[in-house]
Image 1: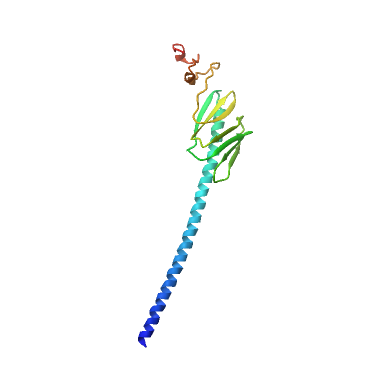
Image 2: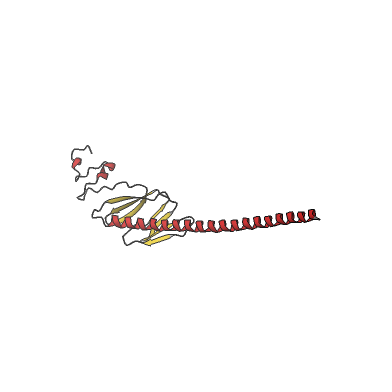
Length: 171
């Protein structure tokens, strides 16, 4: 009879251990699922903040170029190779992302309509008081009728008379 009781205890202890193991497994799964959701939520907040900062920085650089005293001003804005679609329509700068909501800011400057997608850099150019956004690096404008030495004129083989080295050039 003693052997029969031992078998019961062994069976009971195996059952208890199995229940505890399954309970611990379920508790671990629930814990990691909660942790995973929290981590995904925090990562989403980081990206959303980064996207708002991208729009704010671009707006700030547009203002900086616009407020420059010179007329032919260019600035290259690094986008850090994001996946986006930027549009400017009636002074509203909108940046759309593939998996997130669009970010939109209102510009106070005269900005030409633009449509730029996934460019690593954006050229911000001010010409005659109007801002223009272009995909890629700036080409350097050339205005020989102002009082500024535009070194970019050399790219177009034009001599700007305001440049000191223009007089002895071949073009």
